[in-house]
Amino acid sequence: MQNTASARLARQTNPEQYDLVILGGGTGSTIAAWTFAGQGQRVAAIDRKYVGGSCPNIACLPSKNIIHSAKVASYVRRSQEFGIAKRDFTVDMSAVRDRKRRMVSSWNNAYLDNYKKSGAEFILGSGRLIGPKTVEVALHDGTIRRLRGANVIINTGTRAALEPVPGLIDARPLTHIEALELDEVPEHLLVIGGGYIGLELSQAMRRFGSNVSVIDRNDRLIHREDDDVTEAVQNLFEDEGIDIVLNATLKRISGKSGQSVKMVVEQRGVEKTLLGSHLLVAAGRTPNTEGIGLELAGVELTDRGYIKVNKRLETTAPGVWAIGEVAGSPQFTHVSVDDFRVVHDSITGGKRVTTGRQVPFCLFTDPELARVGLSEKEAKARGIAYRLFKIPMAAVMRATTMSETRGFLKALVETDGDRILGFTGFGVDVGEVLSSVQIAMAAGLPYTALRDAMLTHPTLVEGLIPLFSSVPSMSKADGDRAVLNHPISAN
Image 1 (tube, one colour):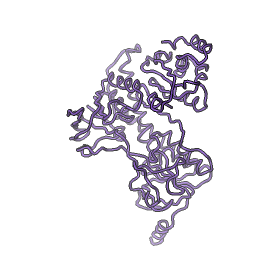
Image 2: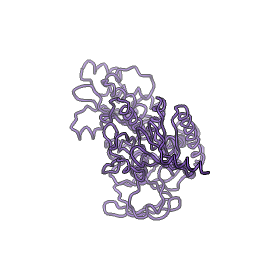
Image 3: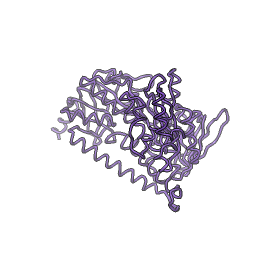
Image 4: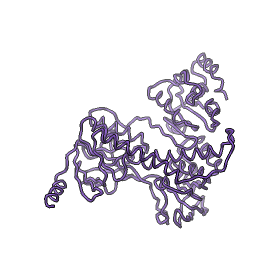
């Protein structure tokens, strides 16, 4: 016993030495662990609960799994439209949840296998910095480990923000984490927040059979987007029977989520009462920076509470880096992955930085909203002139075969050349279409390269041909050829 205690004390006072210690197991840091370990470095990645972080466990992948189940429910309701006799059906939320859990479990196993293959060490426990480049980990068995890295990466992410509304905390609201674990269809779901998480889960729960009300403080859903986008999304939700409460200030909440909830909001000076069975909070995120010892390691925060980093993602402490949402990066997994690339270059002598990046996004409602580059609002705010290309999804032949013609495609092209400034799609699977435009933009290709490409027929990406044929080319002869080739662009 004495020898065991002495060994434990030695571990506590003499940190284990690593080339890289990673605090927080998100996607960017997970790939960092595998990559650096695969290059022969000694790497340890620490996470309190999840193998692979939020994305494969409680966020991106589980939510899309649930959303796909909701899409199937929608197709069943629309079955007569496709020539299939309609039958009554019920939604078994336990089965929906269990399908999601099986997927999560399979990814957990794949991640653990990758840790084993790469040689990186995954440590399940609560970590905090206790000094320069030194992390202390409280393991679940009650023991303590101290690790020191030549470099340290912090990737602790964010959590759902709870506004200081009287009664909100006492109501024990759902966040996206608990919403993805529901084993029953809420009778009436009240959703605070008209952003990505709120909208995706609102539509899914409505399609499962729940009454849904979305409450947002702004005058439009996803209010930063162009007016035609916000109008299209709002029309979609109204058509699906979702109640939208805009310009709403939360005043007070009473009751318990899962039982009965009463919410009082104020709209233009008038109070309104909303009743529901469940309450979901999806109104912003808060960085996970408290209680992890940042001040002990010399890591400073911004005035918004995120870790302060430069364009190479180095913090104010030498050899300590921050990636993903906790560093104030756009809140997407693909950005976290690119943040890893920046840090990898920074450590190994490369030149990649965070400035000037093209950040694509996709809102996984049905249909999807996807954008990369400038919106019309942004272009106008910056005084950037553009030519607008726009077609309805009904002009995309593949969409008509699927009876999925809601929405549109649009692109902004510079006025004095052929460079694509931005692309927005609201339509079926436009997240996949967006990638082709983004690659063309990254390669510096003119829009005519997509217009004149021989794309497989009939596919959704083929819709880029009528899109980029919808406005005459700078060259009249070239423009005549494009219009003749694609008369559907005139629809």
